[in-house]
Length: 76
Image 1 (cartoon, rainbow, N blue to C red):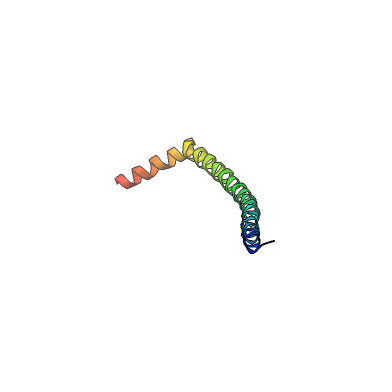
Image 2 (cartoon, helix red, strand yellow; image 1 turned 30 degrees about the vertical axis):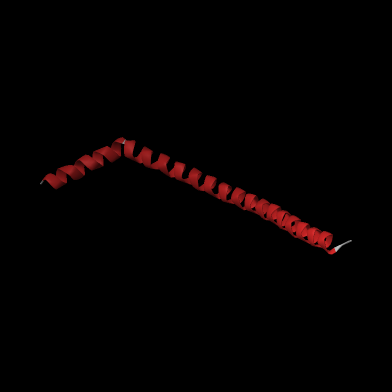
């Protein structure tokens, strides 16, 4: 084996090692993004529930009645 072949093999092994490292690192990113996505989905579900509660409060007749009383007090 001449020195030129040895240099080519060393460079090829270095590049192959970098590609393999990048491949496994990117797989870790997918797992992390999956966990992040699950966390965000949970957060969105919580927010939807809170919005439903707020909608129920605002559309309640008693809420409107209380607001009308407060408006009357402000007018005095």
